[in-house]
Amino acid sequence: MVLYNKLRLQRNEQFKLYNTYYNPIKEYGLDGISEEIINDKIIYHGIQCKLWNKTLYGKDLTTFFEVIFTRLMEKNYGGNFKGYLYHSGPLSQNVIEAFLNSRHLVEHKLEYQSTEQSSSTLTFKK
Image (cartoon, rainbow, N blue to C red):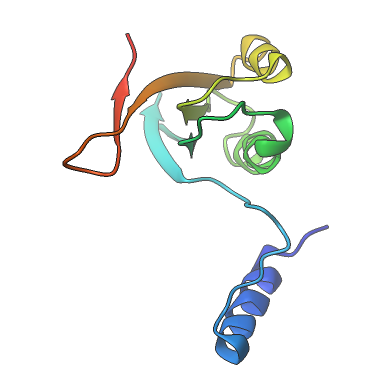
């Protein structure tokens, strides 16, 4: 079992001592959480964003899946919660199938455009 708060404290200590961060886990958790009221119950949804040009594989989304199917499922009593993935790159076949086979996963492909005025712009692809 990974103790995320312990890892966070270790990263902070590392920064204080060496002015650099060390994170043994590439990432964990969500980029955002939204809430919605359905039938007078608060339902929490998870949000993950990947501004990548490379293909997204399951290994890139493991902690997103973990939070969606453990913590949010438990918090929402297995209800109508969703995990939203906003991404700019292609998805691997396994990730595509995971989203197709779960009513709890929703993906949105965003177009990535580099502009001269700003470093990057994301727009919804219709």
